[in-house]
Length: 152
Image (tube, rainbow, N blue to C red; front, top):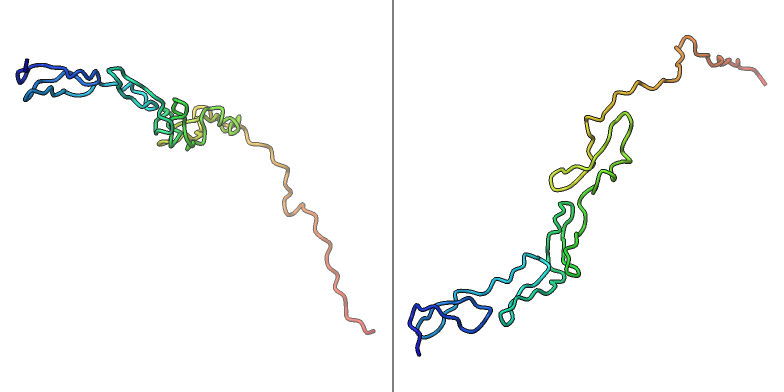
């Protein structure tokens, strides 16, 4: 029995969506959506079942602003080269000073850099300097004695 144009039909391929008959043929309305949302898997459909295989080396985004050229390795997205001067506040600790304040890892544009927390700056008393002498109290170097010309 021939199908009437416009009737809903399936062509037997489980990876295609139902369609409509047109000139005696079933015209699918599209393919089954097998996208799992994982950039590190190649998604497909075989015999009506979705497949997901590792997309080794494919570009992805690890969600960290500090990495560039992230790629899929072993089914997971791994960050590439770091463009940040710090990854956490601990990376900025060597800069901490009791008077100058505490440093933290903060975002600046697309990169993270160590930044001073202005609320932690403390005014410390000046360090004592060694006593200096005024020019009048400085010892003078011995005067040079002039030699008078003498005959040999």
